[in-house]
Figure 1 (cartoon, rainbow, N blue to C red):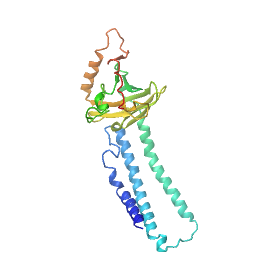
Figure 2 (figure 1 turned 90 degrees about the vertical axis):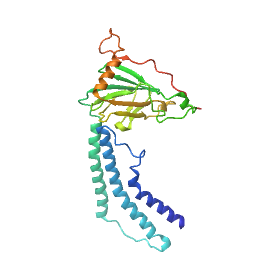
Figure 3 (figure 1 turned 180 degrees about the horizontal axis):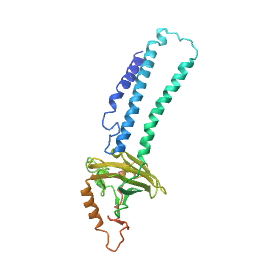
Figure 4 (figure 1 turned 45 degrees about the horizontal axis):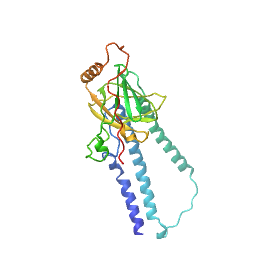
Amino acid sequence: MYHRVSRLLLLLSASLTAASVYATPGINMPYGVTPISQQIYNLHMAAFWICCAIGVPTFGVLFYSLFKFRRSKGAVAAHFHEHIGIEIMWTVIPTLILVALAIPATIVLKNMHDTDESQLTIKITGFQWRWRYEYLDQGIAFFSNLSTPQAQINGLAPKDKWFLLEVDNPVVVPVNTKVRLLVTSDDVIHDWWVPELGVKQDAIPGFINENWVKITTPGVYRGQCGELCGVNHAFMPIVVEAVSQADFNKWVVAHQKVIPAATTQNTIIDTTQAPAALPATAS
């Protein structure tokens, strides 16, 4: 009897504290710094509160009934037949709730892939195990590799704050600019995922998927490959640096200087050396 009451109290406390859990850092999705990430967050929280509004009273009545009318107290089950009105009600109400959620979800999904009126286009190609970025309008291309020291990976040095989340060449984009992302892969399926930007786009060989970002706050935003792609899957992080338009223009000029004068304007030249050897996994 004691164990039954303990389990019941545990379940009740879990259901009552569910509303406060969403605010704990690292548990809920971030609000983000792009219009899409914020729309996704708002949609998620609306669905969360609707689930709480349904779940808390439903499970509350369920647990109360299990405790109050348990067999050990001599409760006798009632005998009754179906009720057409109740059956219609519990079919219609959930349908209306699903439709009410589906409408804003469809709008957000449509907005996620609306790349019209983009001002900058970047092609992202996943490799085992690094990323390649091509600024199609500026004629700039480079590989982005993991830059975490080998000693940290092998456990021979203390891990810093950005362990496995630092790269040699970050993606640089201007703030308040709609950036069109063309995502593909050169070998296996990868996934370009930066939570604070609200982007998680599959990179599939032979296909180009479209997405976009419009970062409103300058800063550095980090992500990872979100698709298990091989033994060094954890060694292909993503770093996006959002800067002012003036700083972005300077960055473009600095990277375009490495292009030989004889090349045409549309030629894309790698602005980095050949990618370094991938770090070995710790034994």
